Image (cartoon, one colour):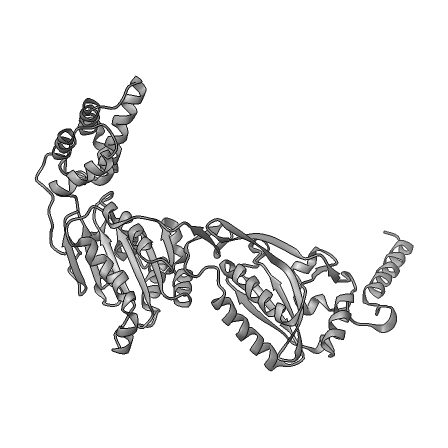
Amino acid sequence: MDRQTQDFAELFRRFLEEIVHREPEGGTTLSPLGVQLQEFLGAEVAALPVVTHPIAAHRLVDADVALADLAAESGSEPMGVSGGQMREQSSLAELVAPPHRFPYRTGPIDYVSVPSGPESTRRVMSFGMHLLTFQGTPLVALQRAANPERGRAAASLEVLTADPATADAFIAEFGRRMLALSVLRGQVLSFTGNEYGQSAAGATFLPRPTVSADDVVLAPGVLDAVVRHVVGVGEQRERLRAQHQHLKRGVLLYGPPGTGKTLTVRHLLARTPGTTAVLLTGSGIRFVTEAAELARAMQPALVVLEDVDLVASDRMMHHGPQPLLFEVLDALDGLDGDADVAFVLTTNRVEVLERALADRPGRVDLAVEIALPDQESRRRLFARYADGLPFGAAAVEAAADRAEGTTGSFAKELVRRAVLSAAEAGREVSDDDLAAALDGLLDDRSRLTRSLLGTPSGSEPGEAEAGAGADGMSGGGSFVSYTAGY
């Protein structure tokens, strides 16, 4: 590059620098949006602090409801912000800053459709603000949705006002209304994540099950014991509190796959209408902290951790402590004793549960074995799944007696196979189809299928009846154990 070109480049650089840093015409140091907000607030907005209140991603719809309720009292209408995509990365203070590059001004509101129930949605403001009056003081509130792909894992509310005390009071009232008007209260929920990490969890609404006590075939007294501990304590909450008794409780349901643990949980959900319930299973258990926080806020509440052995197995099996295990333990310990929250844990492998989870009262104070069904329970199960089909009662009982050591899942699959076989042959299902389907499932080649349907490894149909054992917990424990057959 020759000298003349270098001089030109330097002159052009200085020109651009001067343009970028030149004060806008009229001497204003604010964006058009800043000018509007300054007029509304009656104070120099560039000198005012912005108070940011984080909101969990799954509470955005509650935040929208609460802010809309506060704005309605002030007669405020929402407004958006235009002036470039960088607005999403800019704080409220930056939105009102000098318009060197992005002259932010009022514009369209950004909305997102968010579930507000199992069969309903709400149009929620994902980027927009209200200019309102709170306790006689003008105030600006900017609402943002989470944007994990751009590094914003949580939603937020940003408040700008000339009086710091008003900002604090507004945020406190905002939080109270989020709780009082929450669309999550009394719902059955699950948490979901995405590729951006655990903090990006969102809530999924689930329909509340309608499983009656007659649908749950367990040995006498088993279901009653679980219901009394989970539901009965909640029904007597006021009397227990008056006598200074704790309400927080933990129940562990353990036993082979397919014996009725999940069905028992579904019955508990059906028995507790109006109770906020969070169901976590598999990888979703990583959201146990969020579930416990929501349960604390939405009492009475129920938190279900299915297949908890996946994260709470013996630490030595994994050569050291597991962070997720600690989160589960912290969630169980973190609530006050008078919190009306029930934790229900299920596991197929009770023998590998971490001792810290099983042995400490207040984490699990009732353990119930959901064992393989005895003959009477098995007959009831087979009759239940065969109900409405043209099978003879004797044939159903004979099938149940032959299928000793199997589960309710086995009975359900057996009936389905019999119906399918008859359908493929183009005729009505019969006792012969039931017997043939049973022969197929009891065949040696179906060993893996039986295992998947809940027949324990090393225990084949026809062996000694599985009965109630001891407490079933590795190393005993200081919790109450209720043990019975299916």
